[in-house]
Image (cartoon, rainbow, N blue to C red; front, side, top):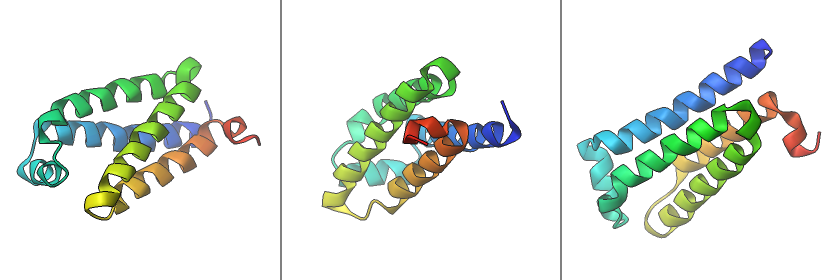
Length: 111
């Protein structure tokens, strides 16, 4: 792996793991946000799912499938948040993941 690929992987994995840990550890602010969208009882399950997807995304042989799953996961998060509030955080994470994936494997984008 090149230095740019290592950096891109590190940044994207850091974002995904921190997001998952925030859901699993259930801090008050996160719980309040999930109460607004009526998903507080799924908090730990969503965090665990995010960790599983992150592992699939990190492994080079399953990176493309992992990228698809990350995009699907955050696409769903954006859709859910559109009805209740502004999904700015989810959009920003997804954009960073796309940029990092470009550096990891540009062929995913047909380049």
